[in-house]
Image (cartoon, rainbow, N blue to C red; front, side):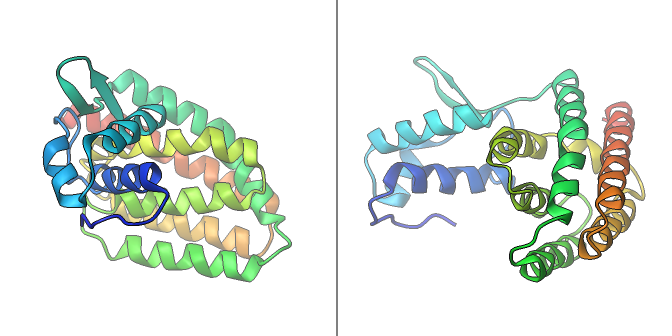
Length: 216
């Protein structure tokens, strides 16, 4: 939902609002971002909105075309598989590091359980934003600012690819089961188990996306 912005972090707040609209599917890949409508709804000028678009370009969510405006990025099958390959390299490491988390470990586990519960409650084809939030929380819990900063744009770009995975029958229940294995390993501080569970999960996602290409 769009809301008027009154605080000082204007550019970031605008970027977050537009990002949420993209991740939720309100503005779809390839669609032009209605800058005038958004400016009016948020009660802002076009300048901070354009500055926010530049932030979203860095996330890989937006493509700005001179004299035409800003568009939600397309993502090709090749790009999707490339992103998943990088995630399969980095995310298991992040999960392993998160399993070692010493500060507020119980709070971290409760947070990802809540995200998982929210994901289970979504219908087939929905829930991409919640799924990414689940993975993002684990990467952040790794304690590695470098890993998290590298992963963040990959998570956002992954949302644009989730439609392919959702085309595969039975995919949702498999992902739910995978998430539960990851949570179990993290909760028991099983570093090897967390790494393996995350690797197997992302391999399943990649296979489902490949199958989804054939169904599309």
